[in-house]
Length: 114
Image 1 (tube, rainbow, N blue to C red):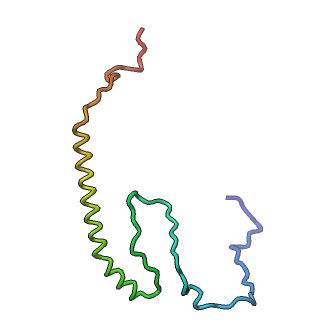
Image 2: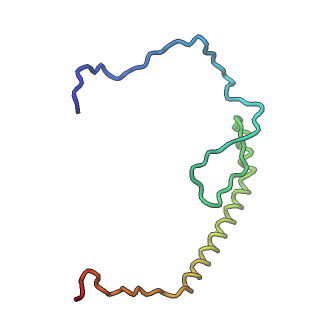
Image 3: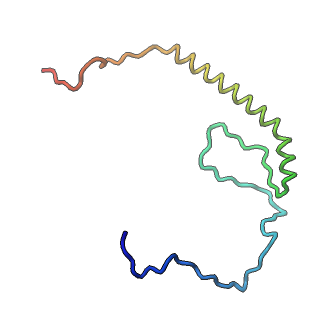
């Protein structure tokens, strides 16, 4: 570590009054929201976004979640069935593929033959 004799401790920013600041308790409330945007960095193929609710009412969100639970369970069951069918099909295709033989197998590449 390099010594710093001028070090006076951790810097603390000064609080500066802002005469134009007015606290707004309803800043987050929107009455005319028409769209919702998602920034998605990575998604697996087949991901679906559905049943989206935007609310600040916990009871309303809980009620909506209960209404969509049956749909979610049905979608999950269908997805699992399709995945199992895909795995079975891939295993069958792999079983039917002929084995390939490496033509260099057993040959010592490190030795030069003269």
